[in-house]
Each structure stands twice: as structure tokens, then as C-alpha cells.
Amino acid sequence: MQFLPATKVANIQRGLRNASEKYEIRSEIIEALESPIFRGGVSFSMRRFQQRSALIEFVRYLLRTLTTEELDRGNVEPLAWRDIVNSSSGSPELSLRHSLIYLGHPDYFFPIVAETDKKRIVAALFPAETGRPASGDLDVDLAALREWMSPSPPGRCRSSTSPRCPTSGVTLMRRPKRRAVRPTPWSRLSRTGLSIPRRSCVESSTAGSTKSIVLQGAPGASKTWLARRLAYALIGFEDEESVRAVQFHPSTSYEDFVRGWRPNGDGTLTLVDGPVLQHAELARQDPGIAHVIVIEEFSRGIPARALGEMLTLLEHTKRSEREALELTYNREDED
Image (cartoon, one colour):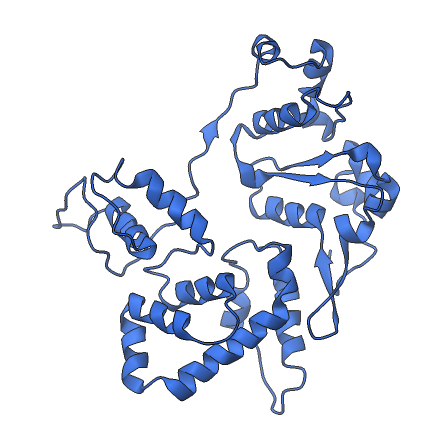
């Protein structure tokens, strides 16, 4: 999710720049790039060489090792396809393999690339909500949950407490329900031992109009705790994805925070977005709610060095299309 479709196309073209035959990126691929599966971190972005190597090994495995019968079975049976993906040699690249598993049978597998996230979902619903224990296979349990929570077709009955073995079909993926958070009254904040003066706390509640605030105080004054509570209050519910925390230090640069060139495994350089552009892209994809960046130790960094031309955008009156700026490192055909 942190890469624009144009960036993904550029990566494909870079990978095929030495192709011996002409190629064309078909329109359905361009359209698919508009619907990302997950948001990778810095480690994922830096391992393109290893991912490309793993993909090459996977294609070789499909074409040179598997029989036609094995491939046909993988096309029909989701778990057989999962075994094929996991049996391929090469670098583990777990995020990539989970993506391939999902792409093979998107009507069965969930678009989740972190096993820890799958475990959390299963642990939260089995057996408390389902009335039955988990099977021990995360993908099977998630598919059973999908079948259980989807509306029943006409003329078909099923138990309301027991997930059944899943079948293929169209599924609407819903964003997890967020827990509502009311703006915290001063009386409740004071009982938690908060050492920030009441006037400062009240002024902080106007962050929705000023777009940015600074919390200043001695170490241990609950600044970080308050910053997150204010962020949740601005959003209206607790949503970890919409609040991102970063930390400044004396050497934090524009290339670290906004955008800069990073080396690839093959000796080339790639233009990589920093936390502020990654979070801005996340906000663009979900414009219905507020998105907040919490900068720890702001005074330890050099704002002009970290923000560059974007320093002026801290002023809320400058956050409009009329005041739009061109980035120092600008991609081709980029607004």
C-alpha cells in the first residue's frame, strides 16, 4: 500500500529492462495495482532482490518440477495450492509467499500476510464466538469464519454457532470494527496522574483546526500518552493504523522522514517514501477518518533538515491544493 501504482509499474519495467523480447503490461495488471493487498514495512521494501529471486525459483518450480496433475489439483484445491507455494525452494520471504497463497485462491484465503495477525483473529473468535475449538490450521479456521459470517444463500440453512467447511464464493471484506473513544474529560485525565496543566490540555483539543500541536514538558510528563489519547479523540475511535509514531534525532534527514534514495540488493538505487509520505498515502486511501503522526523528541531533530520544503505545510492554512509544493525528489508525472 505504501507504493503508488506508477511506482509499481516502474519497478516492473526496471525488472524487465533487459528482456530479449518486447512486452506489454496489460490493462488488467495496471488495474490490479490499484488494489494493494497489504502495507509492507521498511524491511519488505529493501528486500526486492530476495523477492525477485524467490519468484524466479517459484516459477521454475511450477514449470519444471510439478506434474500437470499436481498443478490442476492446486488450481482446484486451496490447501493444495498453499502446499505448492510453501514447497518452492529459495529464500523464505514469508510476506511474498502469503501473498502468492492469497492470489491463488482469493475466494478462500484472506489477504493477510502476517501469521501473527491470523493468530489474533482466530484466538479472539474461537471458541468464544463460534462455540467450537479452533482446528489448528489458521487458514482453515479463517475460511470457516468467512463462511459462518457470510449471509446464507436462499433455501440453505446452517447452524448459527458452528462454522462449516468453507466453499468458494464472493465475500465482502469488512474493515475491523473500531472501539469508540470519547474525548477524555480533564477530571479523568487528572486521576491518571497526568502532570500537564489543564489549560494546555484544553488548548490541545483544538488540534482538529490547527492541524498540528506541540506538547512540551519534562521527561515523564505523560506527553506520549496524551498525544495518543488526543489522536484517538480526533479520529473518534481507537485505530492503530491511523496513528503512526516516529522519533527524531540529530541526524534525522529529509531522506529519512520524507523521501530519499535507498540501495537495492542489485547495486541500484530506488526512491523510497519515508514515514510522512507513507502515512499520507494511507490517509488518501481512507479519507473518511483523520490520520495522525506523533513525532517523539521533535526538539532533538532539526525540523528544516527533516522536513525540507514541507516545513511550510505545518501551517494549517497552507494545506490546500492552491499551496501545493513539488517535492525535492519528484517522480515522473507525480502531483
